[in-house]
Length: 59
Image (cartoon, rainbow, N blue to C red; front, side, top):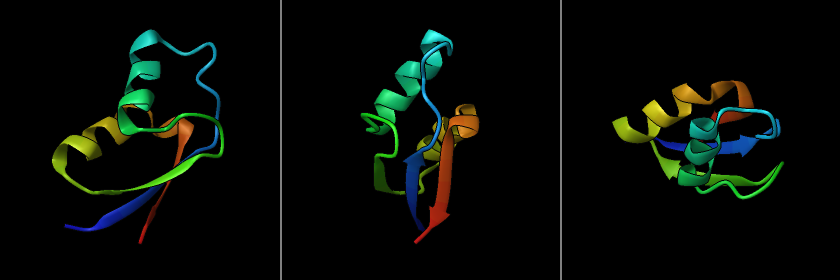
């Protein structure tokens, strides 16, 4: 599976509670915080739900 670098580029303020919880479940803690994850189907589904708040790159 491919590794992905996820960066939060927009704030969760004003978003639905489920979207805030999804960002938290991905491990993002604040704006411009980035993490590297393995692209499992579960992670890709979470990214799809909040892709308007994230920047995703393949590593």
